[in-house]
Image (cartoon, rainbow, N blue to C red; front, top):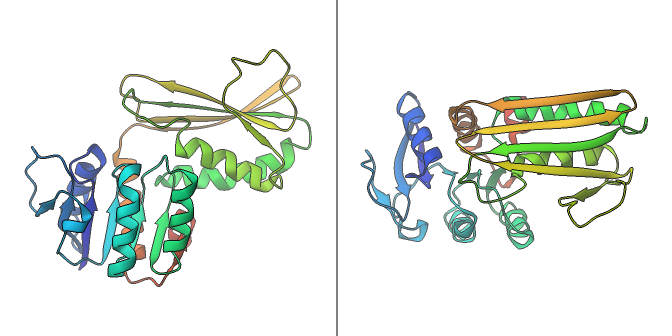
Length: 252
């Protein structure tokens, strides 16, 4: 039985994962972490990870970037692996993730969806063919009106996958409103939409002369991400120190 601590248990994703794990025969949530009350859970809930005195095999994190530092310290000190799903980390926090992974298993992914992670691989192939042929690359992402970070972590991951294939020669452009000039060839542009209850919609556009090729992914439910996180937690429990990602889960 894999014992899980749900970090951010009373958030939308925390509750999705709570319901998913309740249906698993080989997993259980033994504790939750959330500063907000008002939701009745079947497990004890602590306001901060430092308050938690319940041991677990793995932590699933869907909280906020402000809580990540304390979470990583806890994981290193207690040797508890963590599936880190929170996005919007700054450069210092990304470095902290890398340092922590030298002490304990950390799985970090901008998106837990199987489809997105397959798309990351497909984009490398497309970029290797289309970018040298002069195709412009743009990323358009849409999310609900409560999402705080922009562009999304997934949008950045898609661009990073392309850029890695192109030897990181491309510059990211997040705002064209102050520019009065044609786009340069070696750039990846981003457009962001925030509205309604959009779960997650990403388009990667390769625009060439007289043709446009678009790779699209649409998430219709948060359960898509929750299922991936649950599989990642099963994979990570018992693993040694290291920095893992969803490609490791997919490949077994």
